[in-house]
Image: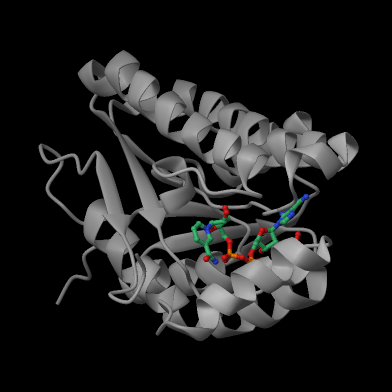
Length: 248
Ligand code: NDP
């Protein structure tokens, strides 16, 4: 029996852990060929070894996506390698939480560049090929922080609200080319994301919230993304907001 994504090519950014890793596996299990991008080569190689037996013909792309030219490069290398790119999952991101008054603007610049500018650059790079084939799907991973702004998350919320706004504007620019744009807004997911929070108070506040709930798992988000990209081409899931049942 033909798998649902057979013949399709996907690129997942931030595939070396968490949501991106689970999504790459889900897309491969559904029959897609999958390119995976992030900085940690060892983690990408380990994932590639799990993708290959699924027939995903994985392409490992080591890249620091904080650079917009690197974001463009991974798209172009995927197209060059497989001859096309059908599904772009813009997932790479960081979450640096700290109060505005104490914020390290250099760190916040890094977050804005990775979470927003790099996602914009990758999307832009994918458009020409998708337009030429009149077929493509861009999935942007935002957050519940793209819908609700919490203390300590001013800049993170700015990036994720930014992703929501960018995605809707892009969707309206490209829907007539049969290109779909979906934005995913997860609540708390059990991943490495919080490990990079440097501000002790902000980290403790998040850990206290996490302790009260059953978190989502990366596979829950991967399932949601898989659902979006396996709809018939006339169906575009514009936006999905999903929280742990226990999250306010
Ligand atoms: P992880 O920390 O597990 O994954 C983040 C991914 O982004 C890693 O693969 C990491 O790879 C990659 N990444 C980080 N910096 C760079 C960089 N400079 N260049 C290339 N890749 C980079 O966290 P999640 O899986 O949770 O995060 C994935 C996305 O989901 C993010 O956009 C996050 O904001 C979003 N999200 C997460 C939620 C959660 O509760 N976990 C909730 C809502 C949204 P590497 O370090 O190897 O480069």
